Length: 350
Ligand SMILES: *Cc1c(COP(=O)(O)O)cnc(C)c1O
Image (cartoon, rainbow, N blue to C red):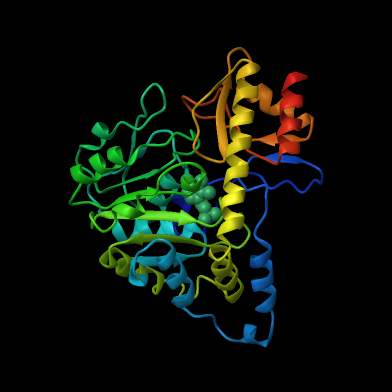
């Protein structure tokens, strides 16, 4: 703390991202990166952009990429908002679209950035408990609020909520914006994007960090009614008009032009997820059903913290959250077959 800090900064409780260790040869299964890597076409597109044009500002509207994403999702470009990672998109959503005076609702076990944005924008948040089986109960979202946000599939549980239940939440909150954060939807869930035409209060957020294996490029987007997108643009142009640089725009566009790579990568993650789940169950873990690129599991006898520590000593990094309800769980990113073998062997040895 310093006397130079603003009152706002003094009050902040920042998000703590998963560790990016500097050591080599780690089996890194802690931040839900995609082990299969980006399409070679993405690398080519970025290389083609490495030229004198870097002296010029990028397209502030990302028109070409927005058109590509709009076509991919069968919406209009004015229904697409781009950001420097979906974290930035989420920040703008909290600023632009959540009402003050009533709390924003999100699950008690969820992406821990949501309460952080509440703090940054001075919005009240209310954690709505998941059921005993760590599911979202749509009935719990029928209460006064300033907006609703949840990931689907949820993180870190991996549990997916069917679109009929998402619709229940949308119908109960027609006067508020409902945000569905679909960071992991491509690993087996069905996207709510197809509902945006029907629900002007629905905003769907996605990222290229997970299924498209571009966490290092920082591209995310939201899709919704043009009025919601306009609100986000007002915030963006009051903050940073050029959130996506030239390389990010070119690389992201190329990622959508290699559907075969994308499909293969998702299928690879899904089949490894099923294999890891069975192996963990064989090792006396309870594994929540996951539609994400990670599993959330607790051992029936051993402590989560102890297991995370023991794995770390073997060079295997998983995520452990020292938080109520989930302190016995490990969140394990699905890696390559070799990494997953190392994880399973490491756990067997314990
Ligand atoms: C990874 C993740 C994000 C952030 O993705 P970026 O686009 O890399 O900022 C957003 N929401 C959830 C639930 C995530 O797990």
